[in-house]
Length: 177
Image (cartoon, rainbow, N blue to C red; front, side):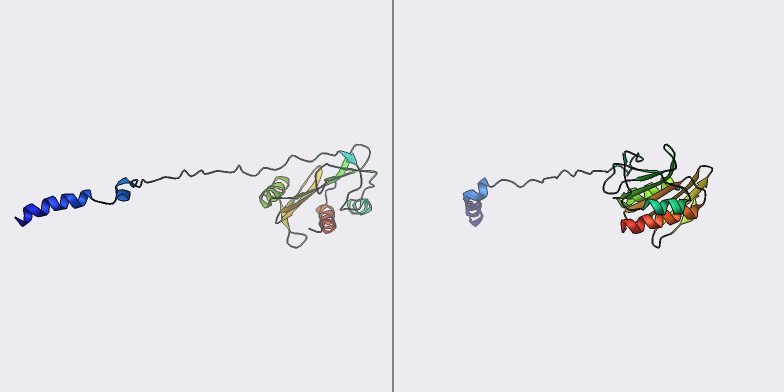
């Protein structure tokens, strides 16, 4: 008899639960959508072009003439900011020396140097703390170095790398990099 009373009593108790518990929503599992973005590999900006006559803001024309061993009758600048590329001319149309400066992403600075002085070029490590390379060919020399987020590339119509190296060192000093 005890069992007969217990079963109906349990049914009544179950039906008497709190209304909040009976109307409570059943929890569900939620999934969050995760978006993964991949950034494109860094690319080298296009080679600067001479745009305006001017004076190189970080390298004296007299120094370039003495260091490169040629008179400099004209200087042109690219439109790059904050450091334009300086083009030093040997005559009205022939560029004797170019100094390209890049400050931005470290990966791009290294790419610029590697493009100018690729693997297999002679190692360059002047001034102290800067690394890169130099390449000589029949048209002259390229001396390219980078440090952190900055790159300096000197292209000269002279074949002696010491000339391009001295000009790079002076440009870096003038830029305070």
